[in-house]
Length: 306
Image 1 (cartoon, rainbow, N blue to C red):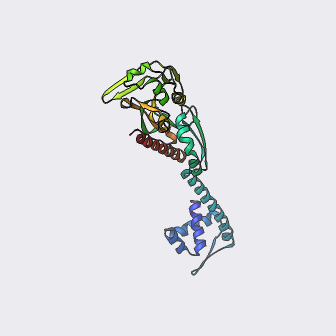
Image 2 (image 1 turned 135 degrees about the horizontal axis):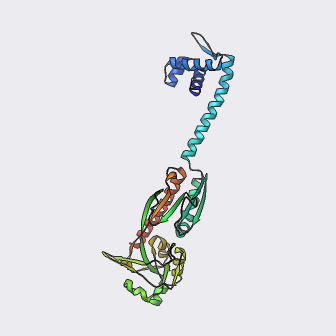
Image 3 (image 1 turned 30 degrees about the vertical axis):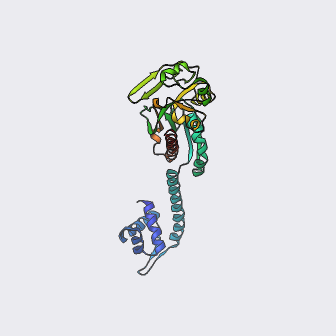
């Protein structure tokens, strides 16, 4: 006997005072409803209904059992609804890791709307420019610059960046504007240190089918993209970095693009999570949120560089 099924048949008969009407409401035959009630009475060892040819009424035992069944099934429906809301509505702790510049320039300004829309999320955000191990550091989702090769991760590639070479207007007025990549050797340069080997990245250039990679000497190099940009804004030298990183500085005139025709393809930016969490509502809503921020910025940069 499926007791819950039998209880539901019993409740419907009690509500409608008819086995026939209960069967119609449940979409089953009258015989099925009669069997359910009979099984329930046999299980309980008591009679639940007075049956006549004209009407079905509850016995005293039936009335007492009806009240208890109503409470039990109401609790069960409430539990089901709570779980459905949990599955459909994002809630709980969400730990994310984002590049510093992305976090400060894009994420923080947009967070109030996100948190207002999802008040049951407890968002924990860490900023850094290194590639982390999501499992070891117990992070749910990252915005990652570069390739994603780990088989246990799911990546949504959102945008592909371009490498721009830039400098502050004050620096260019004082030192001149390079016309070719090789002329950079006569300039002060601000480099970026790779996270793994602490060596400064080589600079990339492309014009049509011509590609160049230059090993350059840097007057100063940082392990932080944000520090690299801030130094360039303060006329420390020329910098090469992703277009999305310098969009704000270009829009406000604090940096200018040099060697514009030599811009080269940069790294992709992806939203990444552990494969086991890919269907989680909280992962989905934050991934969509981060994706839209990156796409908005992509459109803004494209308009700026046209």
